[in-house]
Amino acid sequence: MLQGIQFWTLTVNPDRSARLMCERDQGDVAVTQEIPFTDFPLQSLKLYYQQGVLFLPSEY
Image (cartoon, rainbow, N blue to C red; front, side, top):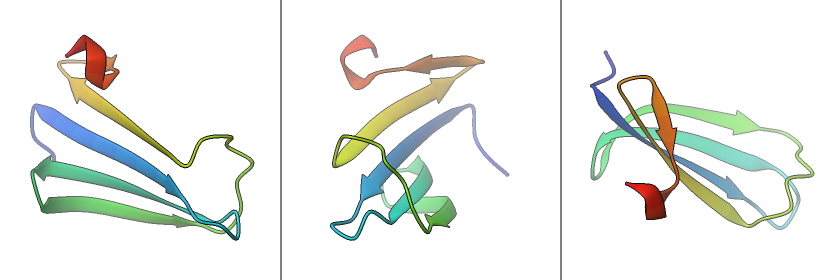
């Protein structure tokens, strides 16, 4: 079960595949999704989710 706060990370690989990962806490992975192809322009993105609100790291 996911917690009240979730830490989401999208990591794009050089071959344009990606991994989306949700952590409950530092190093405690709850969910991982392998993505075969993406055209997302950044190498990685971190987002925080708490009480129905999605935050950028600079906003939390």
